[in-house]
Amino acid sequence: MTHVIQSPAIGEHEDCTAESCSYGVLVQHRYLAESYTPATDGALAYIDYSESRIITEPAFAGAAVGWNFVVWQDGTRYRQNVDTSLAFRDTTWTRKSLCGLTAGDFMPEGLNLVDGGELVSGYIRSNTHTVADSMQRSVHGIDDFRVVLVQ
Image 1 (cartoon, rainbow, N blue to C red):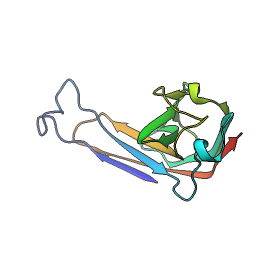
Image 2: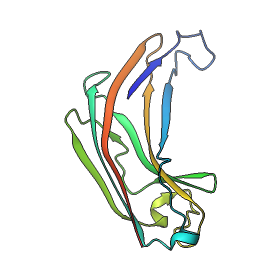
Image 3: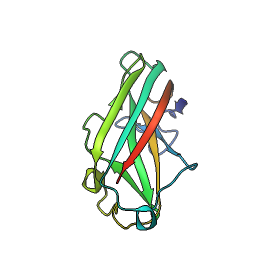
């Protein structure tokens, strides 16, 4: 994946002033090949999630990429909130796992793993750029995306 963010010059856009000029990108990736419906397929006790990730071309030394594991149900996106480090800086392949996620581990409230509608899983990647009149480019990857639903 490549994120490219071009910030305008100060005054070129109303959101870019000398005090603040922050632009970003957020990309949602949905895995549409599989889904699960607790109401018909059975209640879930918890969800395990894991991925391998890397930044191959950081925008600058120490640059980070934002991340979240997410599920969609009945038109609402729920993101995991059990990890306070929602950005990574790994320049070598690194494995991240979140185990035993229950409905209470997602925001907003309302995810129904017992008798709810169809669940579709995925992940988010994001970046921000705060330097006016410049371009930021970050190249990063994900592999071994894995979601295990446990009844």
